[in-house]
Image: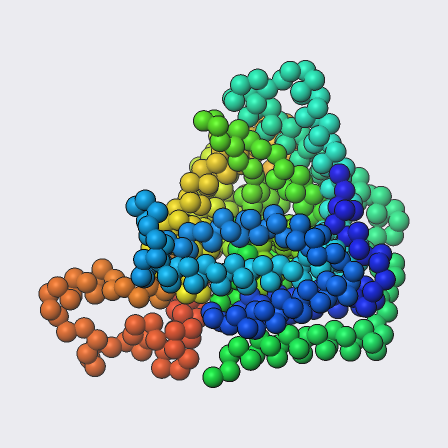
Length: 254
Length: 304
């Protein structure tokens, strides 16, 4: 198991990947916040923010079909979550679906939520496509995410493959012995596998801790490469952030 | 919908939940460090990896349905609420940034719901359960299951309250669909957490024994905090509702004068003279917490 397929554009040199990870995370948060907080009816501003995200994807050399393919799953979840809006909003009925009615107000709200969600997902897709996990971790540490969380994420990233592989080995062993026939037996089997993995995770944590202490660990993981902020990178992040905030602010002008 | 996507919440709700989450995480980081010391990084890393992996397992529930573990109550039972909050925050952060499961702008709200309220309420319920039921295997499993159910329901209520406060949906459908849905999902989470804790109790009891039993003072604090949480939820739901409450309806039927100069409260109809609804809400939550905390101190002083 690996997340390598996610960041396959991280090695592609572009103005986006030349910005240190902290800048990319910051820009992503600004763009997502600006989009998510647009007031209802701000379709022009939503279109402008979508254009900014699409332009950044093009600058980073991330093909549109890759971005759209990565949007499909999260957007499907958003669609499922927001379908109820069509019928729970009181208002003028547009169409009747059995016992419930789709209202005009519900359709408006549904369209706005779906639009905002889709545009807010674009910068997240850009970030994950252009940033490797170690870079992302470094960016989070620069942005002052609690040390415990950053350390836990770093170690979890290393241990996750081992844990999942272990889980799969235990499941394969159970399958090869035809264990877990029937719902009740299967439930007990899965519980036993999960609990065994949990126990091994704790044992591994203790072993890892001992090994880290032997290598001089003092509570925080050292950074291997200090990020290099160039004037151009600072200017790029500032320009995009100001543009995005100006578009978002224009939606609230009287 | 425990992981709220971007586009559902309003700016004040995003800002308020992010601020509350930051404050809670700062406290959690300090308390977790005090509890786990230098082991903190490896232990949190291993448990975070386990929660990710365990969420990939589908547990059959019967009648063709299956569920996966959410893990909030389990980490609260194994690591305590403070370290558990950090683990769930790490999981939420990766889910939002890498898998777009839950919005980036909504990360504060998701952290507040799942990591802070979910894990916190599970920790509180587990402690109360163990203090009340005892520390036998059965009591531990029941307390863990109850903690999982209550925490999932509280997560659902919090999500519903945030959607209502954002003006996205009316109160009743939000409570019914999101809150009610989580009450049902909570049953599956309770069963899974109970089964896992039972297995851990039988095979590796040392993992559970790390948790120190609640002292008398802790129990009172826990009850006070639980009261504050309930009061917070009530205030949140109360000021979100534009419908007349039961008392107002009854008074209206009796044609009694409500809201005259003599009976008007400083925050009547949840409106503050300065700042409106949000200031009234914040003052209400703060007042509920201070009353609960004051009661705690008063009761503790009376005890020998």
